[in-house]
Image 1: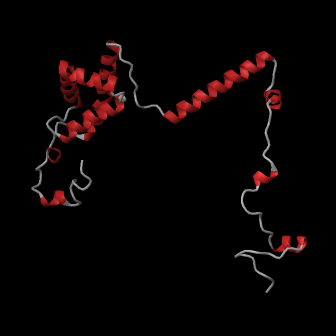
Image 2 (image 1 turned 45 degrees about the vertical axis):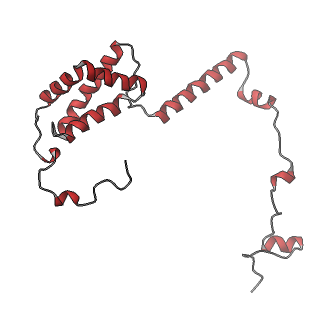
Image 3 (image 1 turned 120 degrees about the horizontal axis):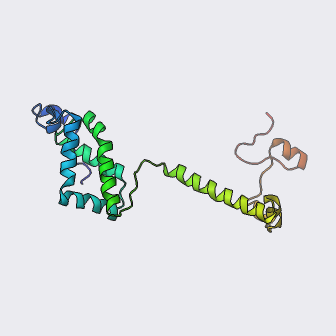
Length: 185
């Protein structure tokens, strides 16, 4: 998609009202009818195979797929956003059950990946503590046995030596230097 190919702000106000499908009343206003329409559409072999291919090959989570289906229906004027919010869980479960029935592993897309990683790290930490306890060692003993390398003092002060401040310069006999150092006024 080209960077500046989208509509400009206010462009919809210059077209004929109710020209787009989402500007007109939706075709379906009952959530049960909308569920029936989506399930019937997704039950078609071509459509179901396409959705399952996306789940399996593209590894896109179900939440993203369902959002796309619902937004497409809203865009085409089939149902409103409100009805889409009501039917989304049913569509999600239908696709999940269809994928599970053919042996495709699915990811819901609701999990917080950061929290999942923290949980994994916590589990690893707990297993390590348990193993250390079984061995009769404590974490302090293990840490004290590990060699600790200290950097030489010369490497710690990289670059030019630090300049003394006004009080430090008087104590060491060095005159303060630098842009921000001022003599007594």
